[in-house]
Image (spheres, rainbow, N blue to C red):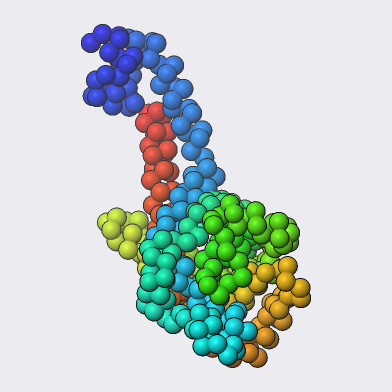
Length: 359
């Protein structure tokens, strides 16, 4: 075989050989190939650091989950938000009252959206979801894994769960501060209908209009409830880590471990969502209200909670919970399954290169 064939990798079998130790003798005969191989190896291994793997896997997991559950997210947001149009519900005009409260349950909400807006309505806000999930899960998983590594040095096996709680709070706080503006825009777009006082043509138009009409502060409306929502990850991830230890052995078949990840992520999400759901309703109410219409109705967590309780009763804190479960549990399963799978395969690939090259 000629040197030209080697240099262009035209032969598939040779391509495989050049990337394994079996090619050492071949490479020795053609020294022009060795620098190429070494450069490829070092650039690949150096690029696949634990931090880079965690960040990339997190970003891919978030985007995948966002696309899969966007329709359910729209339905959940509409159910949560419609209680914020209380004034319209008191209107003497039955048409206005119908517009203000037209959604009931998951099936009814999806049906109404399809009837009024078509399939496109179920993907309203998809762009900010994708844009939001990229930095959210990139930052979250990067800092979560980093924090776990650092904090675990100071904890015993019996107090490992404390490290998981602290790591979740640290990662969740950072990702919330970075991405809150994106989620405000997403919430506005998803809750937009005939009864809302805003009408945006898309994500860019929403950013521009909100900044022009309401100023920079609007993008951090609902930040207090969002930070309060860190209790969600502080509940979910310690439970997830504990279930993962019980359900995943790494000694059984791959399908069994995959099933363990799905079960651990789903069960931990159910627990966390049930405990912390009221804060999501409070956050949504803060995010959907225009900030340029004089005095704000909802101000902070406690005030918002009092108003909702007084006007709508305690059940309003769990409006859309069923829809949220149907949305959140698959979202969590897709996110964590994608993250665990991608990060595991990337690490195996990197470690395999190091092993092959070092033999």
